[in-house]
Image 1 (cartoon, rainbow, N blue to C red):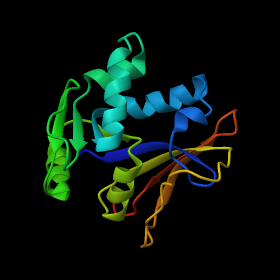
Image 2: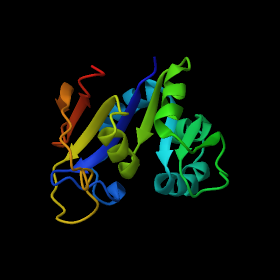
Image 3: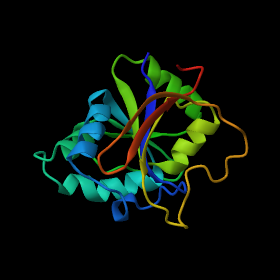
Length: 181
């Protein structure tokens, strides 16, 4: 059975908004990200992240490994408001999210990766639909911005399964929901 895995950059104070403006990115972090996408063959995105990514990634050539993955991989977009999807290999997910994700999990293949999409990740985590949460904890405090765990009202227990400190001071951590691990 496939797993639904999420990967986000996050600050020490929990901000996940606009990581391109504060994320420490180098070859070491690229290697960690590449490991995650190497275990995936599908992408799950929320509406806002889809719209941002659909403007960015198609303009980058396939010689950029992450762009090649983003552009050529099947993408499942969770939205109740989008009507059409222009980005190649994109399919709309509407209706009963839990049932649709169960169907996707039952298909043969690798993991289903959620890159970014903090609102979707929060929803999946809250509803017990996320199997794995990988965070790149950046050594910075922003003080303001969208936080990953805003609006979470119930406790969610996670089990740490991997951690490493990168040379930049970034902590790469991976958690599973106990029922998944």
